[in-house]
Length: 175
Image (cartoon, rainbow, N blue to C red; front, side, top):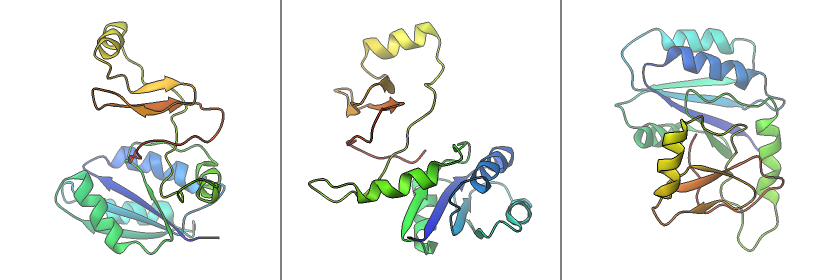
């Protein structure tokens, strides 16, 4: 089984990252390490995270950085020891079997080897009808039902909600 590193950039969102860690610790397949790159105000976050991960067998790697999601992820990549890297935002709540169900996707037979896997949301964004109309008119809606993820002519990406099978996607993002 490959080793797993989970990467989370954060910025002054200790409540959200605590909720994330609760869902991480309840995974049916635990990661080997959690790398948190904190760009927030100085705080006791590292000690809080250590306490939350106590007895979970998940190693904490904590780093500080200036703000910038991509920069923070790059800092984490340099520290990661895992064979597979998972990128999450600090406010994501994982389904209990997310990691376990993701790992086999790297073995899917296709023309080119699978280099990245993008999870799906279990519920669509909740927007007002006005915002949904605006997004649809300008072709910048972010989610769609079914099995066809694509980059829209506007450059926006339409992510899938509850696809019924693994499907190729044009791009992966953190989230």
